[in-house]
Length: 130
Figure 1 (spheres, rainbow, N blue to C red):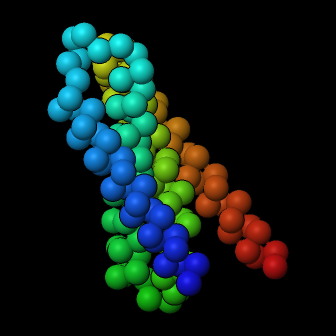
Figure 2: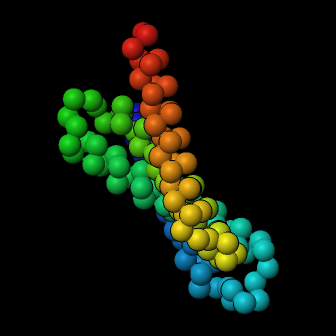
C-alpha cells in the first residue's frame, strides 16, 4: 500500500507542477513579470521534470531489471530524478539570467553525475555491510 501511495504522491506532484507551469507560461508576460513569477516558474519546472524523469526511470528499471521488485526501484528513481531536475532547473535559471556558457553547463552536469555516484557508492557500501 505504501508503494501505491508514493506513486500517487509523485503523480500528483508532477501533475500539479505541470498545470502550474502551463498557467505560469500562458498567464504572465515575461517582460513585465516580477521575480516571484520566475520563482514560481522555476519551482513548477522543477517538480514537472522531477516527476517525469522519475516515472521514466522507474518504468525503465521495472522493464529491464527483473531481479528486484518495483518497490526497490522507486526511491533510487526519485533520487536520480531529483538530481536531473536540479540540473535542468539550474541551467534554465542561469540561461534566463544570461549567465550560462558551455563551461558552466558542463560543470553542472559533472557535479550532478558525481553526486549520483557518491550516493550510489554510499548505498552499496551500507548494503554490503549488512
